[in-house]
Every structure is written in structure tokens, then in C-alpha cells.
Image 1: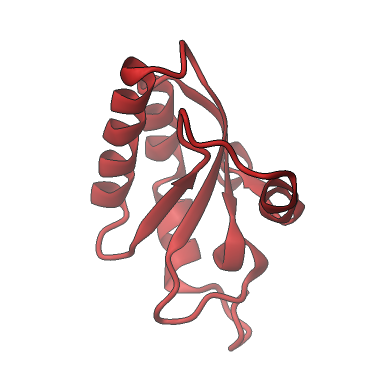
Image 2: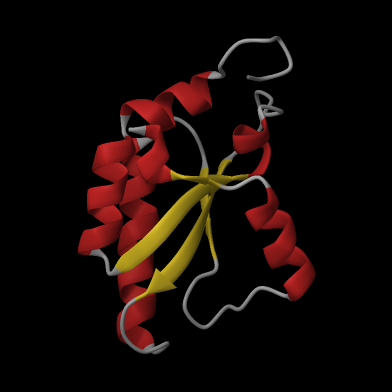
Length: 114
């Protein structure tokens, strides 16, 4: 729930497209994808983006993995348009322990939203 006490449009969009988002992630070699941030906490506002935490990308941390991550971000953004989308961590871009802990604290696995 958001600050008004009801599900936000962002959370509704993620729930409506959860199966599609999981399939996009799988196709791009990502697994253990979770909704996190303000949308997961029910604190999102009109200017909030939708944050996702990616548990794992298959393959190396090189250009192939980064290209698949770019494809995933683009596909998530198309799926959830008009909302802004952010994914972390991307291959080659590690999260510090504090940032990772903050993102996982309220993370909701996409599979649980189907």
C-alpha cells in the first residue's frame, strides 16, 4: 500500500505484468529478481521509479552479460511504461554491502506477485 492506504499504480503494474517480467528476466539470463525500494515498501510517490534487485545474471561479468542486462532494462521499461524502471546490480557494477542490505530488506520476489 502507498501513503494513501491503497495499492499504487506502480505496484498494480508490476503485479499485472509479473509473469511477463519473469519471462523477460529468464530470457536475459537473470534470476531471483525482486521488487524493492519505495514501491515494495508501499511508500512510492508520483515521481518514484520502480526498483528491481537482480539476484544473479548468468555468464561472465563481461560485455555479453552487460548487453543482456541492457536488453532486460529496456524490456522492463517497455512493459511498465509510463513508469521509470531501475535494476541493480548490473554486471560489472557491484553494490556495496550497505546498499545491498537496504535493497534486500524489503525485497518482494516477482514470483510471489503472480
